Length: 258
Image 1 (spheres, rainbow, N blue to C red):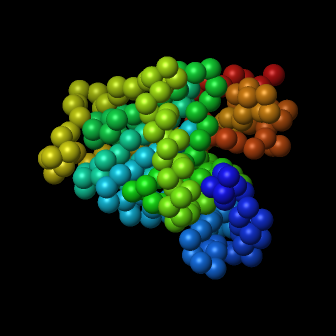
Image 2: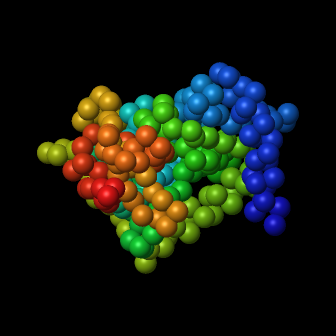
């Protein structure tokens, strides 16, 4: 029961801390919990990269949206330095152009990837480093979450909570009924051996456009709707993900707002 409510008990403290900080991440008095808000200028993407960079043995990631180049590169570099990396992501998101390219890069680096087969979303946003450090929050690993959305990332260095996150990840990873391996790699290339990282070509996630304008939103019923500029609800819509084209949004499983 203690571990189940550990993070929820901390949320009032986290919210209060986030409101007073402007650039530095928030911290508990014991420094076992840190947090950052996108719109407070605290750069959750940088905080996440620090966690990924700190991994020495294992790195388990379950993330709905994964498109931010710096985060993708940090995951790839973890694999190159010998960390055992595993990734679970959402089936519909894996079909989006930008995320598909990111997954090809990671698959080509030899990172095993799984996607959900069940009818719901794989909507988690969590990373576990060495079974000791965990992250959670609303923060997707995307440009929109890092720049324009109201998002937060929580990092906790509390082994009991991290162990609980790790156990859930293991359950999902070994669940062959609801999750399946995704075989993806860079075209005309083969995955590089982790024993020969120096042979891996440097690459980054190609951006289909520099300023995506189409907003993808998931409503309370779980419907995935995208909104184009000038649409009736566009200005008031909070984006879960930004897209460069309607084709990309539809490939990710979104349908156009009426």
